[in-house]
Amino acid sequence: MTLRINPVSVKQVPETLSIRQGRLFFSELESSMNIDRPCVVLDCSKVRRMDRSVAHLLLCCLEEAIKRNGDVKLAGIPAGARTIFELSGLDRLFEVYDTNAEAVKSFRRLAVDVSAHGLTPSGAHQRAENAA
Image 1 (cartoon, rainbow, N blue to C red):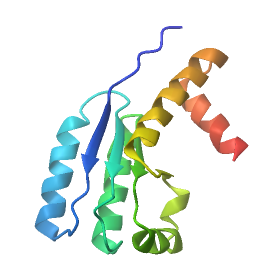
Image 2: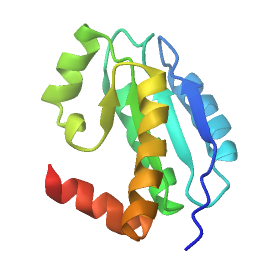
Image 3: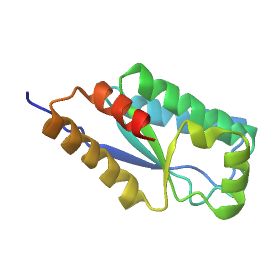
Image 4: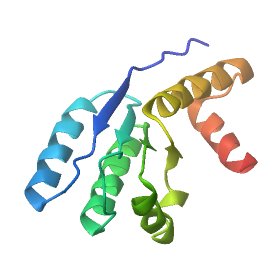
């Protein structure tokens, strides 16, 4: 089995997010996801408030990645925003890391686990979910 590791794309989520900014960010991100199995890290370190517009943007990004058999992981959510993030239940949908480097590395670990155990990437993801 040959396992191709896609490059991991890291995108900075804006500090404040108007409707226009959210659409622009999503449009830029969507254009970089036009590959099979996109690997995306969203750097949330500048997000101060985890309001509906930010939550909606994160969910839209995740949906687009899943449509292409990929994944979105989050990094650097500040403490104030993290509380709202957890209360909203979004922490059950996303893997969250303290730094971009840790999030990027997690994509590499998944690829190693897949090749070592002879699993398909979806099987490895399912195995990780079952272990949690």
